[in-house]
Amino acid sequence: ELQRTRRGHTLYLLDEPTSGLHPADVEVLMRQLHALVDGGSTVVVVEHDMAVVAGADQVIDLGPEGGDRGGRIVAAGTPAEVARSAGSRTAPYLAKALGS
Image (tube, rainbow, N blue to C red; front, side, top):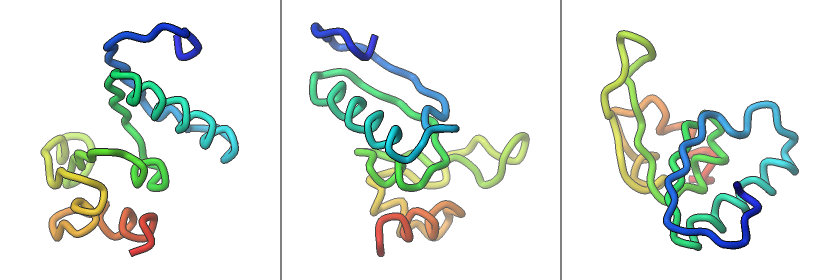
């Protein structure tokens, strides 16, 4: 699917796509995903790798914990906005990935 030359307005949902990948392969995947977005598609990624999250256009941080104690939106916005969010446990890690 990611190699098709003709792309339409497609919604891609990916759960932890970088899990187990070598860092060089993560870079290749991220370039491919950005190309899909540039081509008019939407990519929604569930990810815990803050370097990947830092490269997103928008971030929705769910929490405050996992399982039954989570599932609520604690922060949303650009990576920089979420990194500044006082209520987000993700914020300090994302800020570090952003270099701020």
